[in-house]
Structures are given as structure tokens and as C-alpha cells.
Length: 420
Ligand code: LLP
Image 1: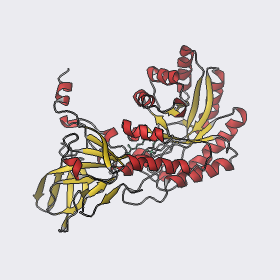
Image 2 (image 1 turned 45 degrees about the vertical axis):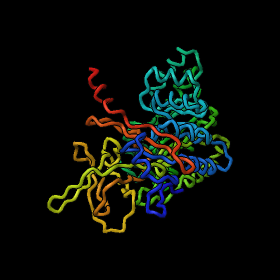
Image 3 (image 1 turned 90 degrees about the vertical axis):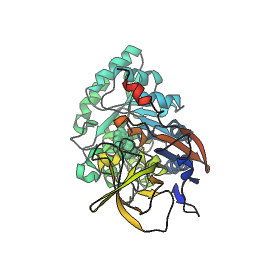
Image 4 (image 1 turned 180 degrees about the horizontal axis):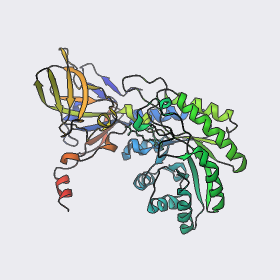
């Protein structure tokens, strides 16, 4: 399911569209994210097929990429959504995602956000602490509704066992996320005291970019043991093992999403919970490989033994390298036969961390490059730092461009800042 290919002329293509056509297109401009909707669709189909007909919801973690075109494609493929804010919830509802396939996670929800979720009648508000229970109950009472909730449990998997970057490991006992497993009993008693709350599910999310299934399965086993006890006394309708399926950013990724799903389902059945729906909350694995960030080379610089290539995309457009030391391969849009040189690729932002790393690019490279595997946590984490515009977005499907959103218009940032 590779979205990025080279055509016979050496042109880099995404979803069959030569990316050079995007560069010159005034409807977009660079930097521009380009996404392959067809491949995202196929990714969702493959994921859903891995459940082999068992009851399930693939609740897409919208935080990975909230572009309307992508949310709609995933809705068409029968996915639900995992949201973490009122605006994400409103977006999904507006895009037609059925509320009974939406779960709402987050450690600190406002009353207005809870009211929106309660009014929409979503599948479950995921409760992340004992302290949240009376708050959700109060909003349920105010709305005179019985509200479906689930517990997001923190299964306390060792941070090292998660084998991912510390910033994206969440299922260990120092994280702010989830109800510690030993406090779940007291939480259940509290839910029982509130007639306006109905516990319908138990879930966890232990971390992101997991490249093997082991830590996921360890967490799932703990979760299912707990869910089994709970289910015996208060029938549940689902268990939710969260997101976290890794992708290959160039250093390999042993496990595919289907491996995570099949391994989890096996544990679920072994725990005697086979009749419950199995939820997962994938974000990255649905979209990362099917988006690139196209940028133009603005300038080169050589000083002493160092060589830089400066592009028009910066850390404000793609924050992952600055925040997690992530490596995203960078390749020229047009393959050349000439010699390659190791250069440090940097953006225009006034920060030392505005550095995408060292890549071998053609010595004479001018023109444009693509930063690969940028479909997840790219645009959604972009900012206007340094007065920069938010990047453009272009959508391709079936070998053609089917939509685009231009960059912030020139002057948008200035007008915004002059409002004060
Ligand atoms: N569910 C919950 C409750 C989450 O907190 C997350 C991600 C997901 C699902 C989706 O995880 P995924 O399948 O995408 O791994 N900005 C970081 C990733 C932060 C992930 C936060 N939570 C990055 O660029 O690597």
C-alpha cells in the first residue's frame, strides 16, 4: 500500500499524481501537504477486514489528521472516531460520523464539551480519572439524560517495555492519562452511585508508534482480565485497546495494524469476552504513510565543513522532528543521476530545532523536495509561529487532484495579531 512512487521520468508521485504539478499550482502553493485518499481508504478496509467479521469499531483518532476530506473518507469506510476536544467532536458530527461510533477521550474536558457529547449521544465519554465521574454525572443530571461512559484505564505498562519515544508513551504509571488500575474498583462503586451514568466499556491506550505487538498485547491482557471481572457484574458492550499501531518511517516496523488487531482479538476471546465489540483507536497507521509535505528549496549555505539546504517548510509546518527527534525521509521531487551530498535540511524558523536532519540530496538540487510519511500529526500540529502561514493541503484520489485548501492567505496572520 505504498502511496509514493517514481514514474518513468523520475518524477515523484503520490497516488499516481506527479507532485511537481502541486508545486506550480496557485491553488495550493508550498509548503503543501498532499494526501492520497484512495490509499487511506484501502488502509481502513484492511484494518476492518482484520476483525474477520467480529463486532468492532475502528474509531479513527482524529488528532492525527482532521482534514474534512479524510474524516469523510473514513466515515464512508465505516470507521467511527476517537476525539479529544469539543471542536474535534463537532467536526466529526458535521462530517457525518454516526455518534454511536464516537468515543471522547481526554483528561480535562470542559462543561461545554461534556454538554456537546451528552447532547449528541455518543457511544461513550471516556472517563480518565475518579475525579471526572461526579463532573460527568452533574452534566448528565443537568441535561436529564442517562449518559454512556467508559473507563480509560492506565494499565501501568513499563515505559521501557513500550519501546517508543518517552513523549508518546502514555500507559505507564507516571502518565496523566487514565484511571490507575488499582483505583478502578472505587471508580466503579462511584459510577454505581450515579443512576445517570451507565458504564458501557473499558479501554486503554498505552502509547503511540508501537513497532511490535508485545506491549499492546500485554496491556490488552491486563485490560481484559479487569473487563472480565467488571462484565460479570455490570454487562459491558465494548472493550477498547486504543491506538498506537506503528508505521515504518524508514527504520522498519515489524507489526502491521492487522497483526495488532488479530493478536488482541485472540486475547479477547481467550478472556471470554468474544461477544463484546472490540474498539481500537488508530490515528497514525491510517494516514501517516499516505501524506507528504512538499517544500521548495529556497537557498543553500556552506560554511567550513557544513552544508545546509534551506526549504520553505519549517518546524511550524511539521513539528515531529523538533519535538520527538523524529526522522522523516526527504527526497527530491525529480530524481537525478548526479552525485549526492549529505546536507542538513532546515527551515526558515528562528529556532535551532528547525532542523529536519541530514539527508543525501543531489548536489545540484534546486527545485522541490518531499518530506515523506507526513500524513499523521503534521498539519494538525502546525502553527503560525514566526508569522508563518498554515500550509496548504491537497487531496488526490484515483490518479487526480480532487480537492485543495490553499495556504493561509497573505495578511491573515497580520490581521489576526493586530486585533489586540
Ligand atoms: N487514542 C488515544 C487516547 C490517544 O491518546 C492517541 C494518541 C490515539 C488514540 C492515537 O494513537 P496513534 O494510533 O496515532 O498512535 N504527536 C505524536 C503522537 C501523539 C499521540 C497522542 N495520542 C506524534 O507525532 O508522534
